[in-house]
Image (cartoon, rainbow, N blue to C red; front, side, top):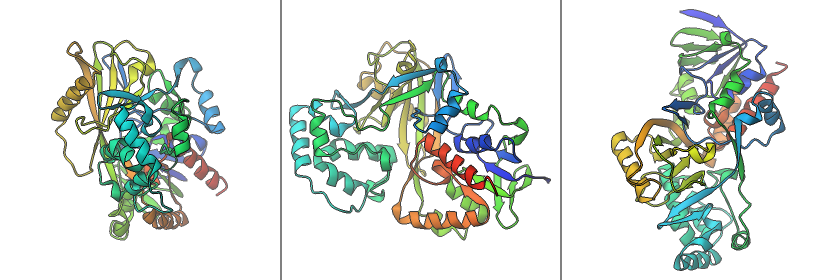
Length: 424
């Protein structure tokens, strides 16, 4: 078997791995990517005149270092800037997101129920689960009308099994005062009230990250088989790679299994996640919903939880959608049946009608898609990460660090590790 050596070996060519490689492009690095294309889930499909990503990726860069990097690579005229417009389809009505700050847009009886339960909710210092937190902070009606059914569809699991802080800073919390203020003034609590998006899809950011990395330092179509942390050697399906430092971005459970499946089994067996089936759909004409960027669907009559409108973001004429369906990891999905239900749901919601013709589509399964954060496992996870770092292994990003975070957070993780290793 072919043998190579490097100082920094990077597993995974998503945004985390590419950012680390970019920070160290002048050094002795190698990046191993199992797919034939870089980007991980930030890949873009160009098909029949439609532009689709693997799922909805919207960019909200707030870090100056990240902003400066992309401003130097991507011209402003290749991006669109939007003030976010997001809706919820509920009981044949369309209301603004988030649900809890827009209950005044509901039918009168539902509004009264939500306001009453919100006022008389029973808050606690500590909550036993994500669902317990929802009831405690928002009351029965808001929880059961939207928060519970929507998140059950998203996470594809019993919400009692999710940690109360499963979404961290990304959950749109609001207290009674904020909710009542929103009756007359638009809610301002979102972390991403505006966003930017590349006219040619999310891959524009990936291309910017990869632009200055020599092709000789990237190994494509190469799968990691095992990791020997004592010998500091990664075995792929093509070669052995000896390293000084290993930067991992593949899912944490897969990394640990590739090192020693038995010794970490007690930890990895407790990790949970869901997968997401994404349909990208292109139609012959626009929809009457010509301003919304993405929308949420809590009701069980829809098999999807979210729909995004690429054409409204990119100002294209033909309706171009991504539709997301949450699934448990072990579930098998009949994609044709799921697509039929999607089209039925889109018609029921009024997004398409009998004159819309499906001109092009593709499906993607993201597995894992959302990792399920568990604070009880967090201490053990940090212990494992510390042990790995003691032998030169650093694991970063949403999946490598097994956390709920943004694309920018993942890149900042990589920069942080790069700085830590700068003088080693």
